[in-house]
Image (cartoon, rainbow, N blue to C red):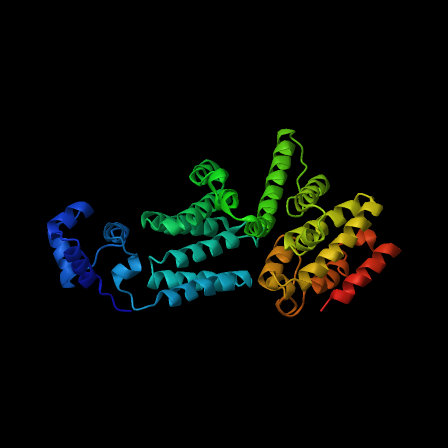
Length: 383
């Protein structure tokens, strides 16, 4: 990789009609340092790059003159994410470190690498030694600060979100809350503001498209509220399976059903959402273990309808041929041991039937004739 940063600084400085002394004063360095950069006898330190790029209103990559196209950099960031989604976390960490060594200022690569750190050190993942976890989190925080200092507006919000998540992993909750507090209020989000200005059909399609994410986040808030209540009552009760207990699961499903309504096309759209399906997996288990068999059978029937919709949906290809998402959501949250070859080659109905039903996840229903018939229907969907 060759750098032409000196030539670029001189070119930009000339375009802006400023002297070496003026630039040096802005950056807090000497005019001699700027002269050395422009003559190729030295380089700005990495902490100075964001200020330089911001001053000239160019990306750091353009300032450096890196011989790597933006498309190639984005491909590298995507490869890191792909390894993470496939469960190859250590390989993703290694690839991310190498990528950052070569391209230390690429925001997308940094955010991809930090995302791997979060998954690797998450309490729900494989236990990581405390020292290693703390070192990785500190490394991630330093890298995120680099993105924040770059004044890359497009990356500001995901950077703050990742920062809050990292701080939360190591229990620095006050700092995490402070980082999260810098995020915009929900009233100023695209999803809340944009529908006001769309025309009728566009408005309907847009709202339908954002509902799954909104409802999934509402479900998380309901679960957090319930857990807070349990904590305040000083009980040892903990929410299980996605953080949803029986009551929370039913409340969340009621929210989904009320939001989508009874129009046939909306019911089908609702059923085709992976989150809706997974909530049914949870509530079927809860209802059956609570001895509420009639209700568990109703939920089981809807779970199978949802599985069929997911498998047949043209809008959710990842769920139809489950690989990263299915592995991430079904194995990571449900703590099931799924084989990569099954994830890559089979649909979600196959996973539910052969890994959940056959492995005893719905044990309370295994001798119920009606449930057996319904699971046989699920089997016919398995591919």
